[in-house]
Each structure stands twice: as structure tokens, then as C-alpha cells.
Length: 328
Length: 272
Image 1 (tube, rainbow over the protein chains, first blue to last red):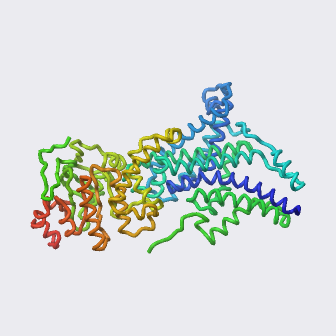
Image 2 (image 1 turned 30 degrees about the horizontal axis):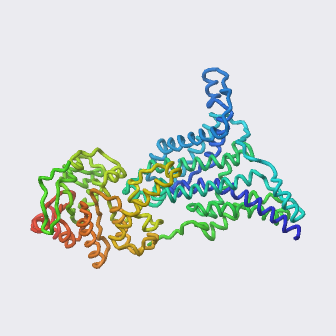
Image 3 (image 1 turned 45 degrees about the horizontal axis):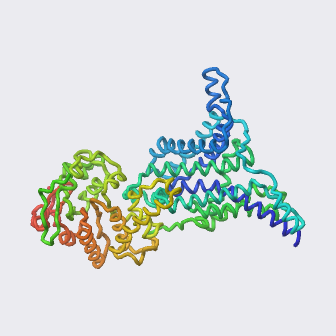
């Protein structure tokens, strides 16, 4: 087998793995957009907030310790215990649900029936507010997150591919685990929305508010539920990305990577988010592999956005999005 | 509870019971505009009650007051003899008041079956976690609800489109699916907002037959809005007539037909 083709295969595999991570972030956007028509700018910050909260709880940090110390002049920073990963994740989920409820009660509830742009602006405000709160609560230093996910090169794949191609593929264990987690998450979300009472109600609200009210669905409850689910997806994305590259402010910027994914997949489609993520992941890695050396590299920084731009021109509703038909 | 002292048997053998819903001196304003002015009427168990009037008379507003979409500034709504506090629409729906909309509000992305199933949401008691963990119970519940839904689908003769996404259906069938969804909730009171609007003669006849059959077969109490006088007079047991937000007539179709105010409103006598 020609060497180039083997390299391309490795690059494709790595691209698929990266794509899964993009898809994870994009999923959070799609969930909220489908159910409430809100483009949630804060989704990336939500992931940052979730990851910081998780690390904070695991390390037994005292929330708002800087603030407390500044006001009362103490020196508390830690409770002095470590919380095991599973318990910390459960607690973080609880925090995300509480946050979802606060967002609904304090912000979104008062903006029902407003223009989409107003709701979008509200989520921008929310993003900055949350970023500040996350800093104030847990401090702004870069933290490492380790909930026990395996990391490093997968030796089995390395050996197997070496025996076949005479060249060992470098595939990170964390990427493999992330793929499995993402698959489980998507399967769970699909099962939830298809087979449970709450899922059915969620789809109903996404489709028609008035009709949903008339069959006895509380919009408030469903929106808290949707924001909770989006918070949960953000937590999963935060765990994976945080483990990969540390929990820090730049985590909130992964949301920017999700935008081209949404342009490709459409804002309203869960399968679209996944396929879009994979296309972008594979596309940018292969492009870098094939064209990168000719133009001096770093094509990964812009490839996704150019692709998104092309889609905006030729297929604005994305691959799977609902076709926009205006009846006259 | 219901006061059954008023009950009587109609000519075609249906029993009309006591008052299910009573509207007392309802006034509804939007800013300076008075949509409903001091209107009172009642709806009795098992009857078909129509609210009619020319365009802009306040009929739809009245229906929205009953279903909780609007909260009147003055007046009382009594349901089963008890005063109803201001409620949100979903709370009203949970009390057993189902409705359809003038401009069809269906879940366009879902199949007919899924749409009708949403009418059963409030009968699904199993919680989120037991649905995930204890599959058997949730399945039994689903089967039970499916049976009710299938009976209604049969009854309204929409079996052949059970799996079709609603968005693909023609107007008349959509109206019927919406009726099916409302019926799936086994409502104590069914509100129909212009069930015949935009239909051709044949579709109107079908819909009339279904409304009569539903009332007859399930004993469902129905309140409907319509401005096609002919249809209403054939269907209903009693009629409220509204004009410019006021009640100008109330009684059996024959009484209403001979009421001078009603004749004036429909023939257009000048209001000065």
C-alpha cells in the first residue's frame, strides 16, 4: 500500500475523532435551538463553567473564596477534602440543573415572545456573566482535569496497524473514549426524545407552542428541562475537552468551532450536528495533510469557516436542516 | 358537583345534565379596546353549545378566556361549580378542557399518531427515571394509552394516514387530526374554534357528522365557535350570539333565529 494512502488513513481517523468533539459542542446548540428557537451564544461558556465547577468540586475548592477572603479577610481556599470523580460529576449535574432553572426564571421567562435577535443578545449577556461568575467562583488559573479517562497512544492500534501497513497509527485513547461517550450520549438523547413523556413534550414544544399549551404542557418546565440537557451536554464536552487541553478560558472558544458544524448540519438536526462535525473534522485534517504543505500550513484555522461560507452560499439550510419555504 | 335538577332529554334521546362551566359577567379588555363586555352564559353537561356572531364579535376571545389563553379583567369562570382562579393554558388543559384552533396548531414535524398521542401526555404518570429503569410499567402505560388513541383514530376515520407526517396532509384532514388530538385527552369540555372554517361543503358535512357523533358516542360536552349560521343551527342545542363584544341572544336555535337583535346584527342594521 502506498505510504501516502496509509498516512491519509491515519489522518482521516484522527479527523473523525476530532469531528466527534466538534459534534459534541454543536449538539448543545441544536438542542436549545430546536426547542426554543434561541441561538445560545453561551453554550461554550456553559462548557467552561461546567468543567470549572467539576474541577472545583473534585479539588474541594471553596466557591467564591477570593470574594470571601476579600470581604472578610480570611484565607480559606480549600475545604481540605477531595471528592471522587463520579460524585463530583453528579454534583456538577445538579449545579447545571440549578443554573438552567435560574436562567429560565431570571432571564428567558421574561423574554417570551421577543424577537430571536433579542433572545440571542440575552444569551451573549449570559455568556459574559457566566464567564465572570465562573472566574469569581473558582479562580482563573489553568487547571488540570482528571476524572480517570485514559490518555496517551493506543498501543493495540499502534501494533496492529504496524503489522498490517508497516506503520503504526497514532490514535489517542482519550479520542476513542470521547467517541464512545459521544455515541452513548446521542443514543441516550434520541431514546429520551422518542420514548419518554418528557421527550415527547419537548418535541411538541419545539414544534408549536400554542398546541403544546393546549395539550397541557408547561413551557416553563420544558425550557428548564432543555437548558438542563444542554448543560449536561456542555458538561460532557467540558470533561472531554478539559481533559485534553486543561480547563481554562479558551475552553469557551470551542463554541466557535461549533458554528461551521452548525452551518453544515443545519441548526435543527441532531444527526446533522454529528455528520457536520465529522465532515469538518475529517475535512480540515485531510486538507491540512494534502494542501497544507503547499501554502505553509495552519489551514486548520480557517478551513472550517471557508467550508461554512460555501455552504451559506449554496445550501443555507445546511445538509439536514429544515428547508425554508416562505408561502405567499 | 353538578346540579342535575336542570337535566333533560333531547328529542334525539341524549341526556343533557347540569352546568359544567359557567361564565359570570366576563369583561375582557386589550388596552382601551373592549373585546368582551359583561357576558354571562353557561355550558351544560353533554350539550353542544355554540357561540356565534359576525367577524370581530369577540367569539375567539371568549374561547380563549375559557381555555386560559386570556385572563379577563372582570368576572368569574366557574368550572364544575367552583370558581376557577386565573390559570395558565396548560393548567386549564390539565383540568380536562381540550381545544382546537382556528388556524390549526398541530405538531407539523410529527406523524398523525404521535400528534394524537400528545393528547395523552397528562395520562402518562410514570416518571422519567422509572421510564428508563422500569421498562415494563412504562410499556404497559404506553399500550393502554395507545388503545385509547387507536379507538379515536378509528372513530374519526384517519387510520389510513396514521404514520403520515402531518405537514403533508390536506387542510380538511389536518382539522380532523386536531380534533383527534383534543379527543385523546378525553376532555370534560371540548372547545372547537371554527371547526368548519375554510372547508368545502363536503368537508363541512363530514366535520358536522363527526362533531355530532363524538357528542353522541362519548357524551362529550362541546362548545364551538362558528360563523356559518346554517351549520350551527343544525348542530347545536343552545346558541349564544355575540356582537361587538356584547351578548345579544341566548337560547335554542329556533329562539335565536327569531330574535330581532340577532337578525339586525346579521343583516347589518346601522349601530347608532
